[in-house]
Amino acid sequence: MPALLRRCSSKSLVDKCKRTSNASELDSLESEAFDDGRSRRKGAGYKRDSQFSLLSDADDGNKDMGLSEKDLQRDEKKKASVTLPQEEVRRSYRKMCNIEGVSPCGRFARQIDDTVADVSHSMLGPRDVKCICVALSTNVTIKDLDLSGNDLSGKGALYLSEALRENTSIDEVTLEECNIDHPGLQALCGVLLDMKPLKSIDLSKNKFGTRQADLIAEVIKKNDYIENLVLSGNEIDNVGGTSIGKALGSNVGLRRLDLSWNHIRLEAASVICSALKLNSTLEELDLSWNGLSEDGCRALGRALPHNHTLQRLDLSSNRISPFALNALVPGLLKNDTLKELRMCMNPLTTVGAIAMLQCFEKAKDTQMKELYLMDIPVNHEFLDALENLKKVRPMKVHHREPNRKKITQIVKDRTLKDYDPAMILFEYMKQENMRLIDLFRTFDTDSSQTVTKDELREGFVTINMPLSDEALESLFERMDLDGSNTIEYDEVKVGYRSTMGKMRCSSRSQAQTRTEEDKTFFLKQLKKLVHKALGDKRKLFEVNAKRRSSDALKERREEKLLELRGKRRQRQISIIAVFEKTLAAEDLKKKILERLEEEK
Image (cartoon, rainbow, N blue to C red):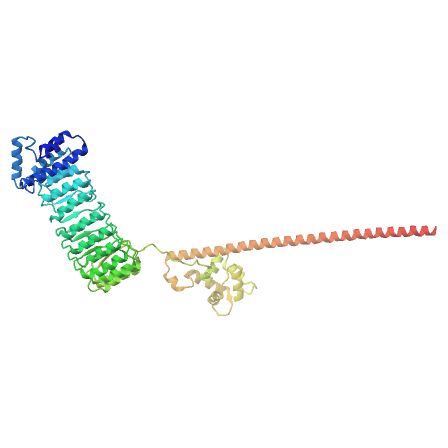
């Protein structure tokens, strides 16, 4: 209430304030008092200095409130000075905080003398921002103001717009995620349309839609001072994007435009990309996380050859497929200023990435220095294409690492056929705890003190390690040193020494390149295979033995059964014979009796 009474510039408004207790009516009276004070000053021909507007608004009507002459003289001295010392700025800030009934922001008070005032995420509301704006209206040191993460809403944006009208030193303003509504943005755009020399403004994450995009488009079209405009993370759709694209074509001051994380697709994407053909100042454009797709790439490909200022372009995550890339690449190759291109998180595939490198390798006019292809799968063919590109131009390509996961070679499991037959033979002798002479006698089935080729073949079959014809011929030729077509015991001893000494497999080239670990593994595998073959042989022998025993048992059972059947048959025959004899005796008896009766 005291603050509102101080703002009232007429006795009628003062009386209304004293009679009113409703909060909503007080808010309406506050805005009425603000407008009434401004109109009275304009009607009286009052020309305030550009550094005292909000301060004079706060103190307007002091005479009507019956303030002392000492206070009035002090205010006149403040107005007479061109600039206030920073200590006076702090006093005015604290005074305004007392009037509004809010706690001073310590971060802002400590940065009043600095060129950067960062009060982001300080939980400031509209009244806190109003107090800061009063101090800003008389401050000449702060050039960069950051109010990100605070709830400015409409009133806070209105207070800030008034401060920006009167402050000529602020060049950069950051209003990221400040919940600015349409009236607040309208007030800010009104300041910018008055050709306020502001170089950079960040309006990201404020949920701006079509209506707000139209206001921003008007600023882009008419304001030539803004060099950096950030609109990332809003809800600018096709209609709003189309408005911004049309305004971008006539802008002559903007150097960096950030439209990332919006809903720009189809027609809007085409209009924005086509605007590059007319724009002559833009150096950096960020369109990442939108939906350019094939239509936008086609428009961008047509516009880039006519643009001679763009140096950095971000097209990350824009649904650019290899087909869309075909429409974009010709424009990239003909552009003579673009130095940095970001194509991350697009479905380009490895083939598309390789095609881009090959096109840049053959291009003559391009000035590309950096290419970002992160999150796109690459392989060794891509690396080869990159090496060829670096031989032609010093271009840095940022890409993900190729798949370096160790690919295990698919090796067919070894069998006994892959080993030297002589090694198999002597390994069998070792595992069976046989002497060399015992091995020789096993193969010498006819006890002729020599082993023929047929006996060698049958011997390997006997030990369950059959050889192929080629392996048998090779082994026999190596063992038959004198060429007699037979193997003698002395020749077996020589073959045993040479085989166990060299420890080689059938392929000499593989043996030469094999390391010690490979040799150890090689011998272990041979032992396992021979052991398995012997185990299979024993199992087969046991199975055959069981089968033979079962067959013998069946034969004995069948013999017994036949014997029982024979005995039973003989018994039946004897019974039949006895029965027949009995019948014959009875018939004979009947005949005798009949004859006796006849004789009688």
